[in-house]
Structure formats: structure tokens, C-alpha cells
Image (cartoon, rainbow, N blue to C red; front, side):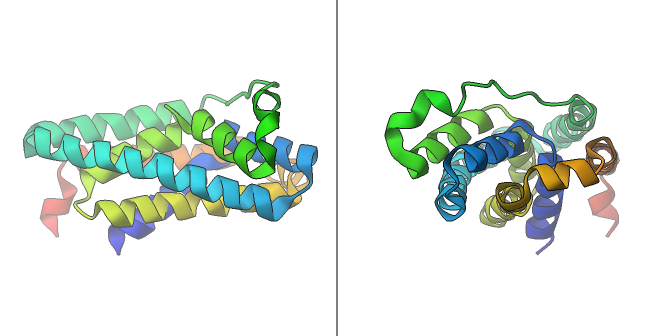
Length: 190
């Protein structure tokens, strides 16, 4: 359960103000088909994070536990720093896939936007950290949905009321704490 809950929380916070959340707002404003967009986000995220989880599982097996602990710890701290850099989205991200329909456009745009994104890298690191890769994938997917579904429905209203800098700061703090705890092998204390 820890892998699922940590993965959900880290990705939900990490996704706030991320380029894929901005993409969700753009798609919602462009197509005005929220349920179709949400379905596309879900499919793209599940496929993308399943691949990231598989890579994380492979990394965990390929590296020894000591090397893995350092790689993961440093990765989490790097994610904390990266969280403080605001995301931008290319204006034509949605326009380049218009011939696919709303669902296809959302799947392709979200899948491509997630490639190498903070949440995908976090999924790799979490899957390497926890042996329960399926729970990590389900948790990171739920975290993406928790952040993006409200963006589809409420978009601009949320952005005006919530300080993205504060949310990014909280997410960065969580990544930093996870990194430090991993480096000091805090899990072995319990």
C-alpha cells in the first residue's frame, strides 16, 4: 500500500502546473469534450507509466542495492530541484494531432508530452525504489488523474486560486525528503 500511496501523492503534487496539466486545459478549451479527453489522458498515462515502471523494475534488478539506493536518492533530490523550474507547453502540441479526433489527439498529445517529463522520471525512480511495480504504476496513474481531471473541468479557475509556486515547493520538499531518506537508507530502520 505504501508504494501506491507514495506514488499517488508524489505524482499528483508533481503534476500541478506541469505541461501536461496545461495541455489538459488547452484540450478542454479546444474540444469541449471533457469525458473523452479524460479517457484519453487515462489511456496515455497508463501506457506511458507502465513503460516507465518496467524500466524502473529493470533498473532495480540491473543495479545492486547499494548503487540503486544512491541512484534513486540522487534522482529524487534532482526531481526536487526540477520541480522548481516552471513548465511551458508548445502552443501547437494539440494542433499537430487534429486529424485523430478528440480521443486520439488526447492520447497522442499526452503520451508525447509525458516522454521524459518529471512524472515519467518519477515513475521510473519509484518503480526502482519499490518492489511493487504494479502498485507504483497504478499510483502514478491515479496521481496524474487527480491532477488532470480537475484541470479539464475547472482549468483557469483553479490556476487563478492556487499558488503553483507553493504547490511546486511542497512537491519539491517531498521529493527532497524521499531522496534524503533513501540516501540514508531510512527504510532499513523500520
